[in-house]
Image 1 (cartoon, one colour):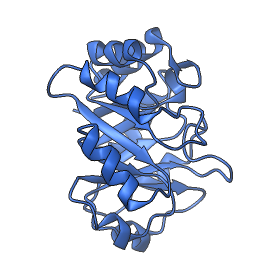
Image 2 (cartoon, rainbow, N blue to C red):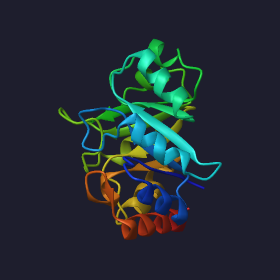
Image 3 (cartoon, rainbow, N blue to C red):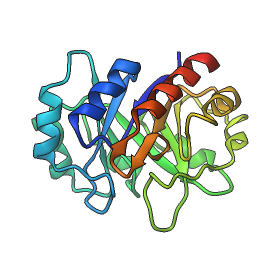
Image 4 (cartoon, rainbow, N blue to C red):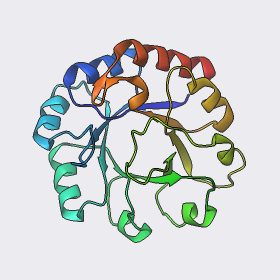
Amino acid sequence: MTKIKICGITNFRDAAKSLDYGADALGFIFYKKSKRYIDPQQAQKIIKELPPFVSKVAVFVDCHFRQITKITNELFINTIQLHGSETPEFCARFSYPVIKALRINDSIDILQVDSFATQTILFDTYSETDYGGTGKSFNWKLLEKLNTDKKIILSGGLNPDNIEIAITTVRPYGVDVSSGVEKSPGIKDHKKIKKLIEAVKNAD
């Protein structure tokens, strides 16, 4: 079954509804320039109310190692997602599972992909100004013949209307969706979340 992460969570109701409909993981963005940024203290309040066995993912962009470790430890985070220009050496320093995000334009460098020791790579759409949440997709066919042992998470422009073809094209380990299930940045549309998760299950 394709794993589903709903990212950019900023309030408990959106978190709860995502889980009710079948999401496997919730993403909390600790990058202050993001439209979906959440203060660690607010995130902690949400996380304390979540049921057990929920996967919490902390998203960072070119953040200091100590700050990442502090937030991760205090909030009982399960997985770290690094969405900036972090090096393979930096990613390897963590004791937590790490998802390294790579932003794709018109090609994929397999040497870059395999240079990261982390088992999971997230592919997102390249943007000169934004680190995720652009609402734009890249050419998924670039991933069809990608020869790697990494688990692949697909992101970038995914929504209830295109998620099925995305999954059947890429057959990823998981999908990461944010803007495609929103009313506005950081505020989720619960009907879209429900529709998207139903579409993922249908594709599987």
